[in-house]
Image (tube, rainbow, N blue to C red; front, side, top):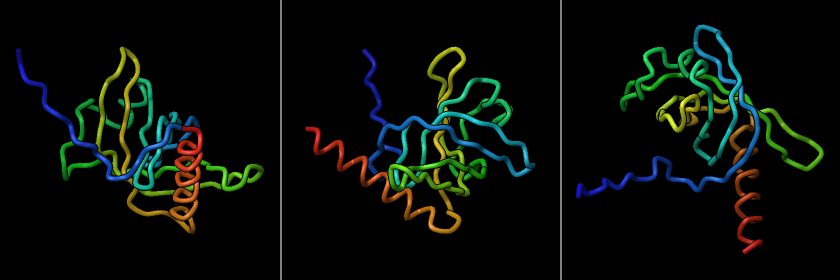
Length: 136
């Protein structure tokens, strides 16, 4: 029997499951919309179909360390229940894996936020983590 390699957590932050849309923009201006699966203070895991992934990663090869793919992301988070705020963040696609015939996951690591984006993501993730702890 072959030993199974343990994969380390690619993010140093706790992740929380969310379901929202995210717009991903390539440096050439091409935009597409995918779904966020989970978010942390340092990045997002995004679910896309094969056509969307081919637009972002034409050869469908997972990005190698140091050869990450630069993108700009925009999505909304509810800072207060009635007031979602838009987050715009530059980032890098650092992870890709196929999870079904026409479904892929992309890991995007945040590099830089516009305005108060980091503070909003930090507050949102913190609130979701606290809510999850309180339910236990």
